[in-house]
Image 1 (cartoon, rainbow, N blue to C red):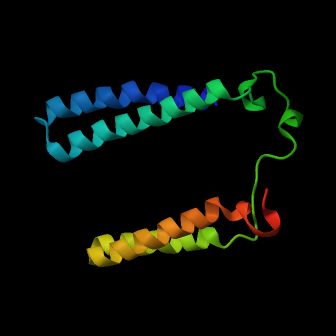
Image 2 (image 1 turned 90 degrees about the horizontal axis):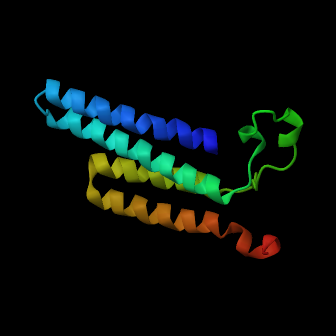
Length: 132
């Protein structure tokens, strides 16, 4: 994760510089200035998260400049191909975004559905035959 954290961390000063230049040239036009500032902050936040995660993890084969392809072989994580929860989360997100355009009452229904689906997906392996 070191390479990813460096990539995002190097983009933070770039977006901050672009924010300052754009702000001076446009006389601090609010939409573009705020967008560039928030983009820089988001990139900085992702870079900080990746750097913090890289400190807690063992080095990956991708981080080794002399690494071989064979070092990355094997299991990469847990994937449940039979799970229906991602479809429920997508439906909840679609209803939530529809609510932003149509009405707040639809937004509430979509948010509730999204939370229920997310909890179901997180605890999928905590019940039934797959319980740990």
